[in-house]
Image (cartoon, rainbow, N blue to C red):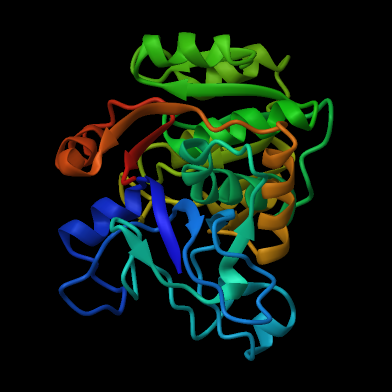
Length: 313
């Protein structure tokens, strides 16, 4: 059991609040799909100790299906995710299997750790785990900078030695992204994205595209890829039925991958980098649990840059 200190909010929390359609769950349901805190109870033989800091892997995977046996827990056929299928972390305590606890260094910042799993694990799997991994010297384009996953993609791209181009409708967010290392920013309300990308890449296009926006950006995302480029999608906030543009896909031999979450081993790598000070989630603001509705509103209005975190302790 974890005594919760901090909970990062995510788009799925809004989805579960508003409907949760398609996700098997019962009401009432405590929300919150990621958290960090202090171990409050540890069963014998778990390797955990009461009082140590930890961050949770939110998928209580079965460990027996073909995907779990292959180490690909996000595809578990019996998946049981906190805040979606089972009670989540917006509470004083949350119970999860001991296999979901990732110990942290004693000096770890629990607010940052509470914002680590969804954004950085999702980003890690997209950039390094699904398609051909992003390489030093390649260019990745990140659609809709401002959210937690997009901000994590920007940080991880730089860690890999890649160039990053970002898009947003906010000049302020683009400027902040440039301050965090983005090579260029494109305002999709005032510029033609694919044309600007070609200018920035000498007419070639980007090697990798990360798109969690969906229908509104899909066409520009495909047109911004170089021949043989790869597109990673982890969301569809503007709709899930874009034009496929199949001729472009097969003529230019584009690769399209769906991705969500990440495996236990991938999360161990993320947590290890975090523990060594190599990763630091961008925190938009920290809101006390009593003001959680204000945190949800900020996330729902798309006002944030980075992660909105609810402080429980």
